[in-house]
Length: 81
Image (cartoon, rainbow, N blue to C red):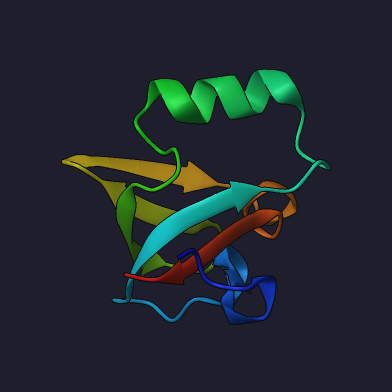
């Protein structure tokens, strides 16, 4: 059973060091950008770790660090891993 939307948080609200599972992308993100994130392995239900929130959100996805602008990261919904 998947968690309810109330249990999901924005990637920008995830504390540094926390491991989370990618839940979904908001419709505000450009479809091409979603495809690019999927190509890097950042797709539901993949587990990522937040390594930085300022000045950009940086996540560790497998063994690759991805830097996301807050305009994108705030529309990435995650849940506890």
